[in-house]
Image (cartoon, rainbow, N blue to C red; front, side, top):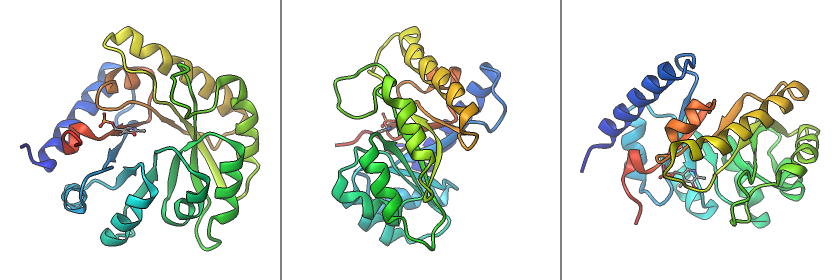
Length: 227
Ligand SMILES: *Cc1c(COP(=O)(O)O)cnc(C)c1O
């Protein structure tokens, strides 16, 4: 199996090639390493290779890993579906959450964010291609949710996230990302704190970067297939 440090190098190189190919500024696409289901040793190997941003999907799993690693320089990003009984855990342990998709969750995260920490960085997850997963706010309710989130003092609205249906066609992959980008630009004029478009995974990273992604969430290409 390829070493994690080598995979990280490959992905970083790929990202900079794609930045150039699509006339994106160098360094404008941040790499989030998605470490869900992977052991602490793998995360540590990535940290040793200078990776600082990690994404986790399951609060319960993340609690132990974050405690074991216990490194203040790491940014932990929660990217999975949020259960309301996990909002306190998330707001205490994570620097970012990408999957805010309803008012109740935003409110609970705000209320439980510890006073001694800066506001929690949030992205609103949008159900852009109306995928049958129930996660993500539908487009027609996005403005309202953005307004609510931006008014909560313990949250900092940073951007939008989407997980479109997987397609093998590059053009099909680009469409939902383009839609999300358009929405992002509209909202940005009302909420200048928005600077993040969280889109693209191992399988659709190029389409996402072509359409303006500022943060790609890569698991498989760094850590290998998940069991
Ligand atoms: C698992 C996951 C990823 C990473 O997917 P890969 O195909 O392994 O790169 C990205 N985003 C979310 C929300 C995920 O759950």
